[in-house]
Image (tube, rainbow, N blue to C red):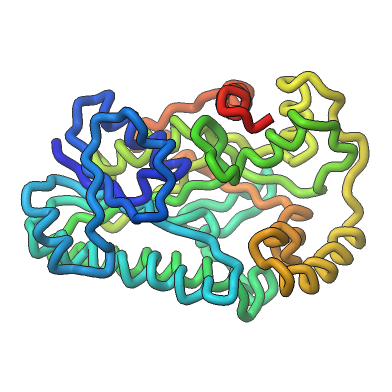
Length: 334
């Protein structure tokens, strides 16, 4: 099978490309001049500079391609971030769908995000059928987090609209992913921070975690046997941040965090972050008040649909943490 992958130079894309090569697929990856080369160095893939906003050039690129994995995405809190997120999540998705349809590509898998999926407590897990209620409260009326949600949701609706036109599209919604090739780092930032030093506090909330290899296989299985028009939440282990960081501490050989982060401290940090983000939006993105507020809440979701219908594996979270830690260590992150 010949496939096109966008976003192959990123964390999740790097894991996906390796699984595609392992099963014998021929892989073409779109790249930009600014794309990091580390994730694909030495791999038997074709790197192509075709821009994602050029539907005609994409059509030519897709002439003999069987399937498309659209993983390209970004969360950009900078002053031009909202326009960039729209260009990548919506405009590029439209170009890919149009080009795929014109070239006769059978199937496209869109990598969206769990941000578009509702959540609940441990005894009331959110799933693919649950929408996020009160968007203004949780993501703000405007700003980068709201723009990220809105453009991802628009991309999901967009790809679904191509199913009646003859392009089989499937959406996957990854939650909190841990493993190797987290080059920025993103999800592994807490693992890396704890590897470097003891963290005394933990957020009061919780998330749904999954192994990066399992998530990559979720994309592969969505291509192979996902139902067109459906979406699949990719996540497995619902853990409080206290339990998660306690497990990280055990793996890295440190004491677990001892104190919950008071909600009031988080709110004050969010106010401080609003000021600091004016100086450097990217450096202080983690101090966004909506991001901090989310970490104080239990945002648990169920990935049972992907496990039961696609056959996604369920790697223990300890192994995922070990993979991330080993990769950070081998690449001199600490």
